[in-house]
Length: 390
Image 1 (cartoon, helix red, strand yellow):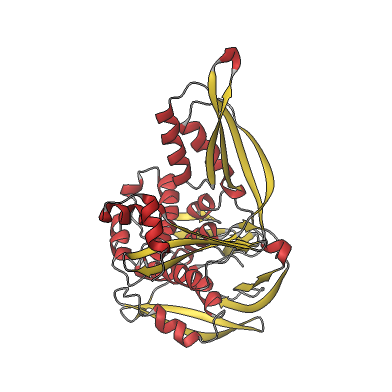
Image 2 (image 1 turned 90 degrees about the horizontal axis):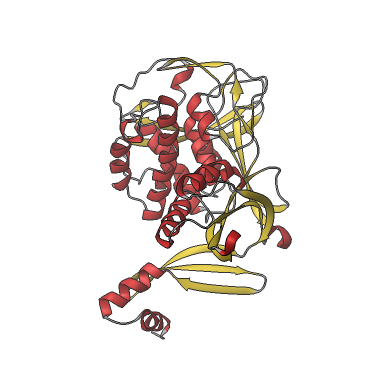
């Protein structure tokens, strides 16, 4: 039944043994005037959690375009929203997640309205309750340990929806743009089932889309929407541990390859940085001789399948290639997560990779470089300082 911020929050909240404690944690974010509340709700005989966000004591409605009442007259720019996010009582990595989700929405609004991102004003998704929904989901995903996420194809609904700009088709234009590259379907249910906020959260956190993988289930959560339909209006979240074979595969990815013999090293370096910043999983080049004995480079770009079209546009934008080859492949990976470690030299971040009987730890370069500069030593010596017994 699609997705909205409050439904995703409710589903994730149920994955924890003490939901009341989780709600208290959400209310400690420091979002001005915001209060999270939960209640048990039944849809088509299924019991789940409905999350209500009250702003200064009043319940706002993320689905405002369903009734066409643009009752929020305070319009926030992306810069306004980023300023609010920066002041939240949350870890920096979670703030980065929140900003990234908003950037997906901003990009969609920019495309739909034909104006620069800096000129977008979020009259429908920039309110405090939308900030609250996005912050809650980003916080809960981090609290869950940032697990790999497989999402089912997204039910977007059908028909038309009223919004501040008039009568629009379902999915709303911003939602449709955000979900480019994701499997979606309309179905027979009339109404907007997936909101821009819900779409952006799914796009950001879903590693892939498809059927539920083989796993041992440890928790199930139901997040309920407000409206009643002939089908249960809820989002279900299932968490568990994959089998050994499933755990060490990362699903399918797309590899794109192109030959380049007319770009400088600086130009290729800039293209590599831009492709990584726009979502590539990895970018690298291999030296080769081209036609007529010219030296050149073969550019390889790995990305999620859902990001293929975006990467194609970016490769053509940032390189001089006139053709791109691609293939879809499976890969094995180690399980990866990041830990913050307090040391006498400050907080450092370590990447931990494990699986197939091995475990590796690697301190982030930025932390090593900071210590090396502060102490006037080499990177190797900084690494030795961190590994020395206390």
